[in-house]
Image 1 (cartoon, helix red, strand yellow):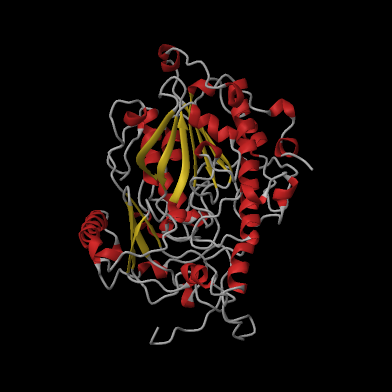
Image 2 (cartoon, one colour; image 1 turned 135 degrees about the vertical axis):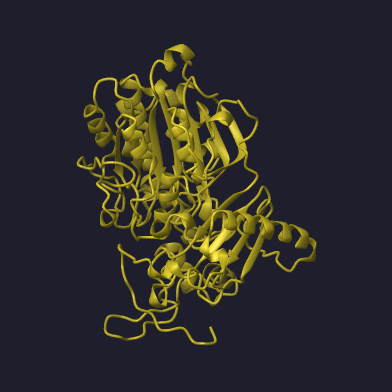
Length: 518
């Protein structure tokens, strides 16, 4: 039986700095002679706290931990949407999903009028590129863009992956090819879009990695069963594979003499691909791991409980390279906080939302929700509570025949965890988990995530929480009004404009029309 180190890496590629501690910080004067490089690393479907820097046993992540140890580790980093396309678009533009039209829903288009920070960097003379998954899924070409919004793609290099389901994109070699293409001393920005730990997984890959079921800490919204633990460990195995690729990229930065002049941001696009996580505004759908380092420019070894939003990354990057945010971005720069020029990030809460995810309902409808997260509470507003949050229970096949009940719910990724829950839904112990993931939800939800991170106990209607609920309602109203969210403005001509945005990528399905009583 093999260890992950033996499966993933030849010994010459082990990133030794992760083993010996933080690097020696160079003088600031030396660093100031060059514009910083930007390395932006984003995983696909990874929840907080699933990295070893947070003490999670699900995955060992020495490369992520290195970035955290040499910079800042964030305990309260959140994305603005629990799905890839809108979350990534928000990161790229510094705007909320409901501010960017089609780009704010899943698998549609990305209107060229919304400028992305890689384009701004290119105009400033940066060598820009991306590998793996940039912005997507969706069709960016239809709007006239010349390349993926995350940057020109470097995806020609491939690798034989150790497990089925792992992408064959060689992120490391593509990064090296990108570096070789730049002009001498030209600053660069590079987006590493890992396709892991997106499903599918090789079942029981954790056994090849010499893991144990005891390593799987099951979150409270999933049943603590062997099938769930195995699925969680397969998820962790893909995180470790992705981290090993990041390790080789960091090695390359060091070899090229660029490690100390590179702002490195490592994060995820949304939460884990499990029921009641990804594609939901629950805690595990929008709370993600994040680490940032810039050796010699920001302090090392910081652990932060400050709030960070996905809209803050673009302003932070532009601030680091000396390009002012002229008000076109709603996000705020984290740089003054990272450099300890201010004591906080300026945020006491973060916001998120979702519209359509998969093709999962009649007429391709979405499930519109908005969320507000404070230190202790998560408030969710579901604008169409009559719809099924995980998608309609059954679809119509290509022959026009109604498929079996409970065979759909396509907003939940097909996986062993969901198969187990659906198959055992008649078990009194399992049914609450099924209901949590797929059952209809009320217009409002309120959870005390400090004591209930699984979002199991809705406190709306609890008299002790009335004042808190009213305050959060006001805060959400204020933000949605400020950002001109059509869901909030209650304009009947604009409210459902989201349903008109075409789905341009992925499966298209047919569902029975909802009953008038639904």
